Length: 529
Image (tube, helix red, strand yellow):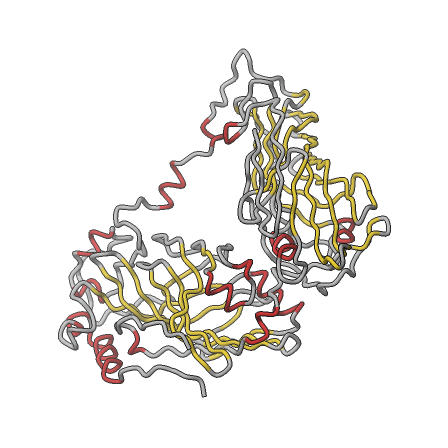
């Protein structure tokens, strides 16, 4: 049987009584279980998908699956997981929230021989992390930190970063420090008020108002706890978003005597693109055991990040919202080495992006295992807006959606046409003295970037944006061999999705069971078994 800890039934009874009788009762039922500043919470849900590419790997490449139970659910289409009946405490002095959730999730692949169980899923805004008990091979390890969380007041779509422990649990060293799926913690239904209130309703009380709320007001559920585990004076993210401006937005749109004409030749520019996050991880991971190398002026962001291509040439027409730009630099993906011979040796160079009314294409020269094909259209592009507006003689179009074409699918093996690739960031200068984002000047030669070893770290660059634009991370898992599509006869490796290596072989199934008594319990010690 799995090794599990015991929870105090007396404590569970005390918390249940406190939840039934309200905050006033809480102060008298077991004073050691909660401070006077703590307000009990219930009916919360936690939604988190771990990592989209991991779910795809399990369901496709590993031929496995996820089985939620005990109230937990999974969204359609192999989506994110939701854990329910969250109970815990809100500290109205520190403005922090600690919640434990019910539900279980089994992750298993007979083909790859792993089964593991996450249990006792918790969110702690003070520590800014998600933890869970992990059961493998009949042994349970308590409170394993799976992800750090960028906590916000709204507690919706919070960014997560997977931990070293998560990388070990899910079997891929590339997950350490990688972006996980966004996290949302929300109350499912408002808490009922035991007695009518005559006070005027309030909307969105400030943390200070919440801290001074009476017990009766708190029990009505009106004060929604914020989750600011950093500093109580942290500004509202929505307010920040509305007042902050991007480098391009701060530029004035007022025409000047030196403003570039509405159409003409591009003086310089950069293109930020990561190809696909999961493909990069696959190349340097435990299956391909390869490396990523940039050259010719291209650069790669640290941590096997996205690429920057530079020294743009081409034409623009802001009246017609048309842009054609070619970029200098190349990136090589190499892996599956056997006696000095590589099963994967793919180089993309001479990248070219076109936009016409908000849609366009991304093409590149492709060299696969020594066979070169020029001008392969890798992705269809769609910008958020059709408008191409120059500010300070710079056109900037960020977050352009890129979708794999049929021709691109032949390049990347088992990725089908229509797969979402990493988004594209474009910045082009229309005059020689225009300054690109991040301080790059127009007409710059750009530095030569190199990336060596499995980490894919980049060299320096002048004028590059160093973009770290990430993609969706979704893939259709491949075979992990050198089978796949061909370009001019050169076969490419099929691509999995952040494919975990053999470390998953010893993993065992996941079950989450959370008792109400854990709400105010002292934090459990993490044990190594």
